[in-house]
Length: 266
Image 1 (tube, rainbow, N blue to C red):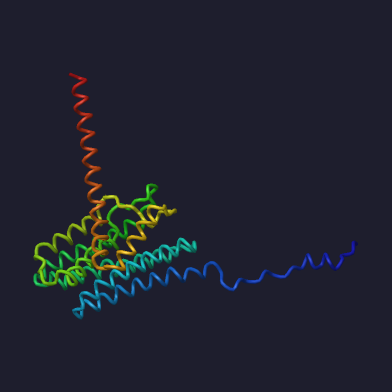
Image 2: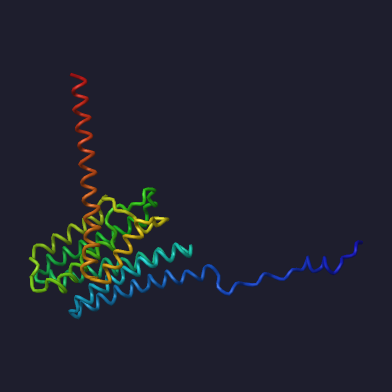
């Protein structure tokens, strides 16, 4: 029988590894906290709308947008994305960007015609829910694009419309027929196949994009309402315009090909 030296005994009986004070999983509280604040802002927006505080309700939807951006950024930075966080994010988005803006636009603009107003605002909420459900089951795009207008952007259109009107053109009444058209077009864009750039998926930030972000921040400091209005509406029109141009170019190519085939056969 061989003898075991004290050094060998120490090697064989090792102390269990000490637990880290903060494990990697504990970092998940950061994005989940932002998601919770997103949901809370949506709830506060609904309360503000019910009390006639339409300007505050619009701003709360935009604050919820900020928290929605932050939770995704923090989840990617800390690498703590989870199924729980994704489900919580969808529920928060449905309240803050589906129910809250639909209730805001109904109470502020469409309540005079209750049936039509409920139908139009309800269509927006339902399209937002469909947009979220489709996003949850769609695999990530390799081209860094979203299919359909993201629901936070759709909510931003209705919120910034209210903010812009109350802070800049309150002395002018928006025609009654404009609001339903805006709401229905926004709803259609959310469930459409129009492609929008997936800014959150971009792994690297180029110098040009950093400059654009800096200019946007300066504009937000100088004039937040107008900047947010043009950013949200410009983003929506960007996808719509390029989608139209893309469809038009495909049509032109098919038409030219058809003409060439007819020429070659004749």
